Length: 100
Length: 233
Image 1 (cartoon, chains in turn blue, red):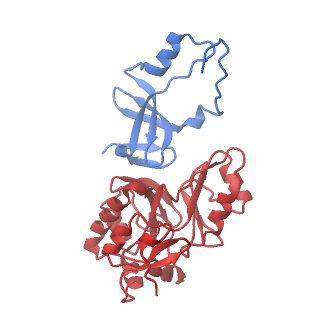
Image 2 (cartoon, chains in turn green, purple):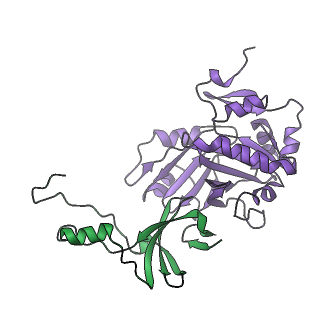
């Protein structure tokens, strides 16, 4: 059994975790083009090398980030999302006449 | 004397069919029925010291989550555990578990006093505090006894031996493939592991636990045995 270290719960069997996709910084929704936004939402880089990924410890529903080398499948470190996300992100009301 | 049966109570445990099969004797607790004992031999408190499984699903519990939850609960007189994944017994016998920096689980004592739980549920939570009711989403089982950790080693990857898993420690993990919260809160001197898990899977978990307990002669026990252990020093 592979082991992964959850920043909140400690080292656990990999079967307790769910993969949540690559992490990418969110483009500014006000200025991003539809192409940029679609890439952010749907596309993965699928890079061979060190990537940052979302993982969830399902027993506690705790989402965190992991730095992993996709070539060696070695997890370099895991860390709480609060390292990157300090504040709640609120989306502004659409200003260009778009309906919600 | 009116016979107490689960179908006559306003609230009943998701395990009431199992309890009926085991010839449980029920007792009233608020608007719910709980199992007092499964046999009238008076042996359950002694068996529970070795290995017992009790259904506490009808006892009061609640939860709160959000960045302001711990501070808000503290203003309501709750003593907050210092670190995530630890639990603290309160002065009134209830227990508060801190599941993350922003999440609390609050459960009553073994007498089922709902004072703290009711009080918190009736307050209007402050800013950044969200109510997270647990009474209908999670079942509550308690595994008691000196052989509990050995039994758990068959169905749970966490080392729950008492020298590794201290009093007041919390583990959110997989138990018999069911996600659950395990809290060690001993009853007197008897080790006790409380399990909170998805209420829809309670019968499965109950059966798995009894099956795993069989080789250690573990048995289902009622709240009378739990309370008698809790009263011992």
